[in-house]
Image (cartoon, rainbow, N blue to C red):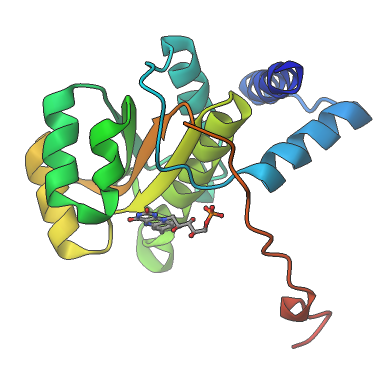
Length: 203
Ligand SMILES: Cc1cc2nc3c(=O)[nH]c(=O)nc-3n(C[C@H](O)[C@H](O)[C@H](O)COP(=O)(O)O)c2cc1C
């Protein structure tokens, strides 16, 4: 619990540092907490029957919007979903996101095509939105929540279904539906470290 609180403080400090555009030196303990948050995150698909506090939702959205973004276009938008009937409709249509039905919260992370770059960099928006999604997952985990990224874009049928259920305008592309809640038990992160995937100075 103490560790969770410390991680939340680290995250809030990071968000504050970004918002005032200053670079702050982190203590060794804060660095270790940040790395621990990254290394212990894992997908969580079942949750306690307990709502997620508004303050925690704000921290997740702030973290998402602090993500790196090509030419600082910030081509993202978010839909916070708490109504049971909406979650049920999404879960029925997106079978790979069935856990949303019993999650207290879902956040849809979208791309805003009106804010995309022109020319060769036109598709960078997908990477920007993905970076925002990962930040959101980390902020969830840092606050003691569990979350899972459910892919929507580029699967056409999922895009169409989410678009219709949430009445998204044409320039808004649903990319990731993140299902969020308090984990209903302890989680074990996967160890994905694989040194053979690393190349130095050439392939
Ligand atoms: C682009 C993308 C799409 C994903 N879509 C789904 C999904 O539809 N349903 C689901 O349960 N998990 C989904 N996941 C979560 C992955 O299954 C999960 O990240 C992976 O198994 C690694 O496990 P970990 O997150 O616990 O490290 C998705 C993850 C990504 C990055």
